[in-house]
Image 1 (cartoon, rainbow, N blue to C red):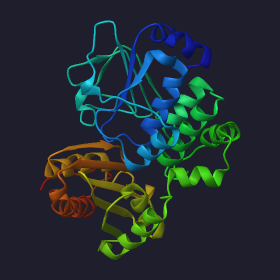
Image 2: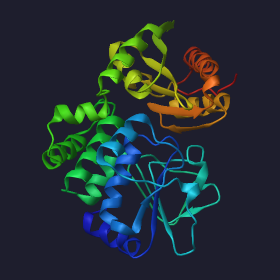
Image 3: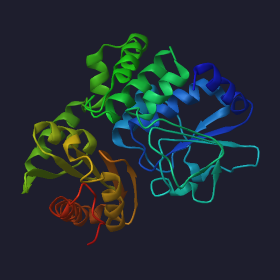
Image 4: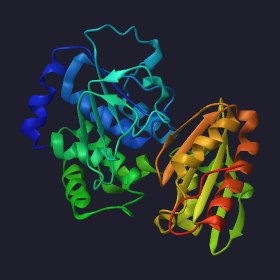
Length: 323
């Protein structure tokens, strides 16, 4: 779809209160896309996550000093319109179970969520990349939000295409920040206390060799997504990092060499059962949230399920999860 056609499609949304939501534990891709779309729609739009976004997404929200309202705190009316972003199924967006949304925009093939209109492109590295070519924004806030989403969901450009780099080139020029600053916002903890906590978390790392693969697990007090990315960059094929904050979280990351052997979105849905909470994400990056006292048990389950799937993988098909 071309930007003009997309603009015409969104015209009715500008005349109504529009609720922009996304999957549980919203990551930078979901939140970045929501920010850019909200700015395009204007004051009629409300960003409404189902629960607290990931730590990296919250850092972006704090940096831009933006406000949001949790979806279940809204009093919806028949006149309201709902747009859901980056949500392929109800398993990661259970707050939409009894809803029919007006528009779904996602870079995954969507199923389960009822939508009057869908826009999807599985060839895109992220929903932010898809949305860039639909909106072509030039304002600094939208550019930064989309850029961070692309960096995060493409796993630092490991899953990038030529169109990804085309979008990134334009967004870097528009956001008004150096790429080193953008990378810090996307990945690295910024304050002294955050940086020293990340280093201390290294003491908790354990590594297991499963066949020809290395699985790393660790526990951190904050910035679990950043630490999981770091463990993969250090050599782990698969990383699970638990975080014991005001709630319990586990963040999972993996190399693209495991594509088709493990699906982290499915695996973290199982971890969420142990945490007694919810999960969100996709094949290469996912997270689960729930009771912090259950984090260590959930990490053990993650390791067991990953081992089971890697050792039982046959004929390029992911075995059904059983534990």
